[in-house]
Image (tube, rainbow, N blue to C red; front, side):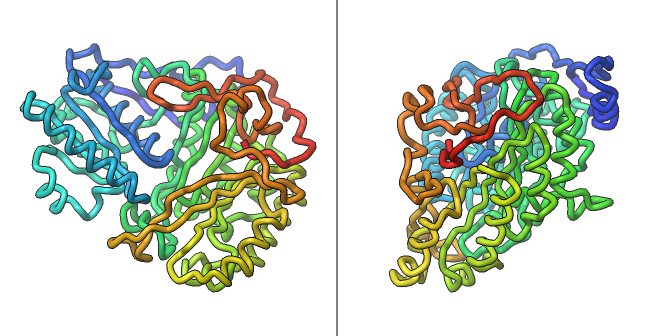
Length: 446
């Protein structure tokens, strides 16, 4: 059975020795195909995308190959999301549709993972008896229950790097890389802490080693992921923080753009802001959700900061990183929010030059959410220095390819061609390690 040696320490030593140093290890060898195929269906956040890549990596090690169509697969894995009701209903519909394939092929193995599973295994088993396995997020080792070939894999599946994916994924220039799992905050509208657990940071050397291997594979842009990404490292020996990690990843030869999301205002430190300003490969873009523009609403959301606290952070970011672009999220119609609270502070805040782009969301009733509601994103608009409304972020891709509504910094690539399966890939930029000219207006968000 195939094996893969994970060598983050030696990888880090290689990158410190310089670009001309011989590589410690090029890439793991795959097990020759055993004739079996797999299919992975994913919905939800970038963390789900990354965890689906990890599932694919495990199946590749076991000798499985991607199926051209679900009807040809021996194993089908669904990665679910329940942050929005619409996403959960899509998962339910997909599970129902797979019953036909299961009847036609009783040997087909179906697995469900993601936030829909945690704590709901018994209810889901009763509701979807044709599903063979339910496993919580990141518990990829549970796949051995339906994929016996994984028992012969010598590597720890829970530590399987995300760079080792299907052959069709080779050559991608962008990659999502999780660095911290779970969340210690208990925002009243959010289900994530109950489904993904407490915060757990990956060792710094493991993350940097994976970045090194991604660069060897041709990746040029890495997005560091976490539900609260700027909480990284507080649970690790020596307590390295996100700024320390960014400094190490910035030294990886071949990586030209580094992003991170999503951040919490309480964890946006001066050291982190300074790192974004100083490190040449870290993009001048910060995603910092505010969620509401009224202190009473923020208190009931359990966000642990006030609007003035948020403004102080924004002011420090703009003072330290000239022409930075800042994206935020706002929940409109939060349970108990009055029209006066919304119009009294939120509208003024949104037009006050605080952020570069704003995602406005509405609330829909839902039984199981702690706040009896869930967010459904309606639209995102760009707000420049003058408070004018600019191009819609979800507008025509044709316009973005022309550059008319694309960011003029490295916030987002000016060209993002559509890849197979609907995934967006960023265009490869020049290999220069120097920071390109900053946006003279700071008003674009895409």
